[in-house]
Length: 433
Image 1 (cartoon, rainbow, N blue to C red):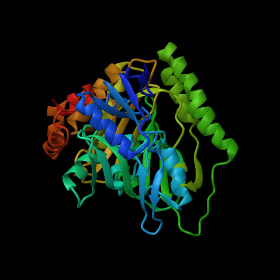
Image 2 (cartoon, helix red, strand yellow):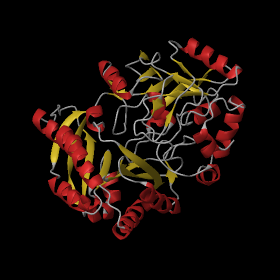
Image 3 (tube, one colour):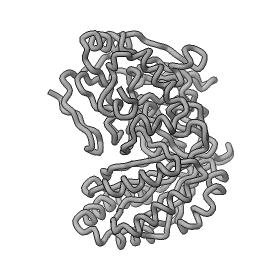
Image 4 (tube, rainbow, N blue to C red):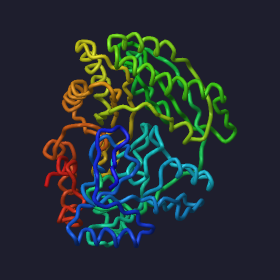
């Protein structure tokens, strides 16, 4: 039997069956057969969600056979992609057509279906998450039917399925609205965290993409400003040695070592973070958008992230900082803050409001419960919505208060999966029975 676990090790399962259908028709047939036998079905991707949203109870479906660009129109930017395609492979394929995603998150290991279904996002005050770039999708439901929907064709299913946490069916393909390939001018450098928080709106609105990382127990943040360049500007990538030094040696190998040291001797964490913050140096480069957006992250951790109204983000970070200072907890991982435009995707964390994201992390060998619980209380009080793929404790009643279209989503689920073929422990937590 095959044992499945997610990347962080927070969830695992041993499904009774593993299916790898080679085509959409085979996927539809397999799902319909399993549902008729009253078996629970769950599609899994790369396992980069920290929650149990993809845990397969009985039948595990892998979408490796649906992992390619099916059609691309360079003139319109419309691209049809198999749902099992990972983002790294997608970015490479789009480049061959001189196209790109308008915005991306900071890693590219996830499958497209998993990233869309959990509300994965990047940063940019005028841009939404990955789901806002979806203009059509094919969804296999419990009856073995393939539903093709857009904003005009079965719009309720479309609005529900763009971020569905896997509760409506199995995504087979997605149609993306891509943009011409573009370069980004990346500017990275340290700033006092209080100055960043005081000027957050200016920084967010003044750059195409802005984010910052703050190391607890320090007063310094690393800021990242990424902006599109004009046609007269060519690529100027990071040199091979500097890239290896910053992104491989320091950000992964040395960071793993310092986290292991911190796990053995937590009292040294503030000194390690102080050293890391002093080691932050400015760098500037121009490269293809996906190479700027996405970084390699090999150090394992656990993560919680909440989307809060953008107007509340500075207060949330300051309250979290005060809690850390008073708690005696030692936190070796930085806190990440990003921003997004309001959107109309029913279960998007940015639905209907300008949003900022606060993400906290803890090394996988260290306890996280007290820290994450305190953060959740702070974020909840600010009207926060948890990322569907990151650790939280909220249930259906909490979430109903935070999503104006929550009951509309449940009505669509009743229509397409009345027998809860795609339910698991996590979906029962967040959507009820």
